[in-house]
Amino acid sequence: MDEVNWGELREIARGAMRRAYAPYSDFPVGAAAIVDDGRIVSGCNIENASYGITLCAECSLVSQLVMTGGGKLVAFTCVDGNGEVLMPCGRCRQLLYEHSAEGMVLETVSGRKTIDEVLPDAFGPRQLGEYHQ
Ligand code: THU
Image 1 (cartoon, rainbow, N blue to C red):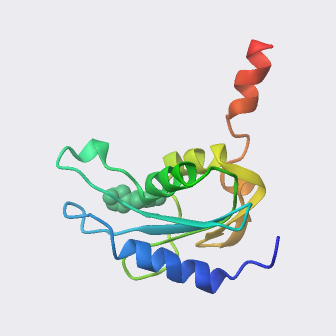
Image 2 (cartoon, protein in one colour):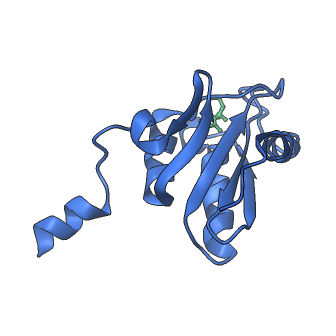
């Protein structure tokens, strides 16, 4: 894959963040990622009066990934309402793991890290496969 243009990816995440529906937390989030075929997908958080069913920006991004042809994520970034890099929440790291290419890189508050570094010893499809064989 070509060199990742992190600045451009962050700008796309900022654009997504501006579409967030976050009237309850007033904490808009935007996410953007590069897919292994070169597509770029993005998402924003979508809150709900029933707070617990809020969709994180990563959920919206993964929906777009699947609906536009699937594939694996190779590079990911997420920003807060100030456009600063935001660490994906734990649930969303699991969500991203399922759709990550091996060695997927995330921009984090402490630099660029692989999916395995931000979700060590992850539970995933392999464990299900091993049990069922
Ligand atoms: N949020 C995300 O969209 N992604 C994250 O990784 C962290 C949290 C959203 C959920 C909620 O709408 C708001 O941020 C405050 O928690």
